[in-house]
Image 1 (cartoon, rainbow, N blue to C red):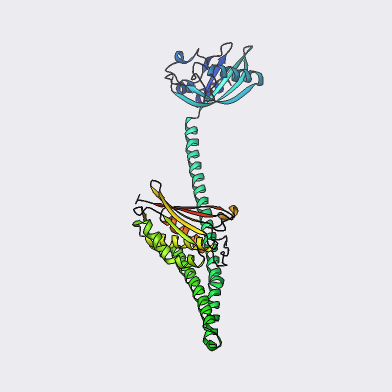
Image 2 (cartoon, rainbow, N blue to C red):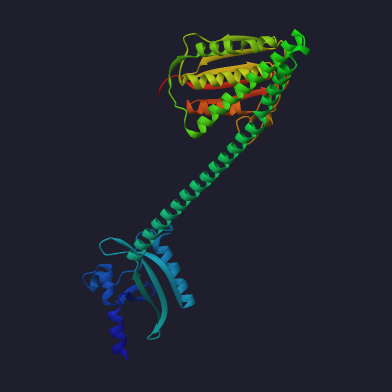
Length: 386
């Protein structure tokens, strides 16, 4: 029987050794013990303590000698104890291992057997598996983010589609109904009206046609941004010239409400933008300022150099915007639109188009407003190609 145990003892791939109190020196060990610890012979290995064959500190920061005492004490109290340990070969190379300490009685003494298994390859495999798990987790996160982004884009597309059909079915059809109605009356009953009445109807037809045209123009430009049909062609241009041409275009609307428009922009100030897009932006911002400013109010368009950008501000003395409504101005699904001070109609599409054009020009827009005191729309536009 003793021979069988010796055969098992020597053929084990695990290091098996005997520890003797009170210093718990290694005494007896199998062939695997010498190989695992890199000892050339028994003299290099035996009569050493667990602390001698361990680095000064364990991975958890405890002193190896102190922790070894705790592990041995626990094994002696409970009969056995299994744990992971960082050992050190004779040449100083560290390696991870599992250790099973078992209390045994031999020749009337209580000793400990230590069964040590080198788990270097296991740890390598665990690291590789962890890398693979991390990689999978990253892929899942990326795919999830893409799915969420796709879902968000789909919601935006659906909101844009709903807004598009809402404008076509209501906001665009209504002015044409008005135009057709007045035109039909004039056509069929011209002789029944005075010149003053005919002029009034013609003025209504003109105003409604102008509103419908502006809306249709915004609608076509906005749909162009959604389908990618609008080309982005930036170039250096003077912001003063764009503002003056915009005022010339809308000055009649301002005069009808006795609104004074002033400009404070250095003529030499240039921006690097798509001329058509930024002209559309300023037309919309100035139109809104006129729309929401009371009669005999004022609008000021100014610009200043802030370094890499030029800040263009369109400030009015109009009705202002509630703080909770400012975030809704540029959202396609918010359906936010109020009538002007002269009951001018709108769809809210103009500001959404402004935001998209400004972003395409590598700029940004922000709003400052106070109810009853007016609003300030501040547009930052790049000065150079960078």
